[in-house]
Image (cartoon, rainbow, N blue to C red; front, top):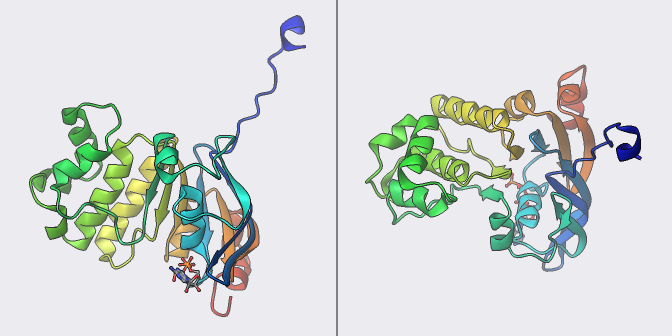
Amino acid sequence: MAEADGAAAPVSVAPALELRNISASYGSTAVLRDVSLTVAPGSVTALIGPNGAGKTTSLRVASGLMRPSAGEVFVGGTDVTRASAARRAKGGMCHVPEGRGVYRNLTVRENLLMQSNAAGAKETIETATSVFPRLGERLSQKAGTLSGGEQQMLALSAAYVANPKLVLVDEPSLGLAPIIVDLVFDFLKTLREKDVALLLVDQYALRTLAIADHAYVLRRGEIVYDGPASALLQGNMFEKYIGEGA
Ligand SMILES: Nc1ncnc2c1ncn2[C@@H]1O[C@H](COP(=O)(O)OP(=O)(O)OP(=O)(O)O)[C@@H](O)[C@H]1O
């Protein structure tokens, strides 16, 4: 026993997120088949795959926006399969959906304050503008009047001020100018440095893999690769799993 001999007991840390044998359908159309994936605490996990593979659906099942037809979802070792999206959010999960997910009729300041967890207003605004200084110039502007890039910055920084343990981000670079894509990836690296667990879906597979620890490749609703992100960048692995014809 650890107490008796003075040795520290081995600490097993529960995954930040685990999808266990998930199947999901839209009506009679099966979209996910027996999908299992794990996101370790403080790590970046990439979920890559062609259009229609089921990446968005996987994130929706993880965050509770969609009920799976089979399988379980665990967050920090707790079974949340039957928990609402709101309860999962309270538990430290934040989902930044494709297409931003900002409150268009609220100002930038109001969007940020809606999401902030416990922190005061001043601290919340300071935190958000430290990661995306441009938002500091837009605080009183309605989110719906921002450019696409600014809306994405707002969506990501709103997730950040919520002080999450786990962030699910769906296609954050979609439709953005290359210079804004750079800012978005810099921000995602910041999350990693802050020890937040990240499950990332993005069209830029190479860039996504470059910041990821672990990767899954999804094809037609099934996981066909589960391994280190770096391994997909070696030899012909990228072509095999992600490139043309994958
Ligand atoms: N609301 C819906 N109703 C019916 N079918 C849907 C719905 N949403 C998605 N699908 C279908 O489910 C499959 C998986 O879609 P999903 O959006 O999860 O894939 P994805 O990998 O995220 O693709 P993309 O990169 O195109 O967003 C696709 O065939 C899609 O057409």
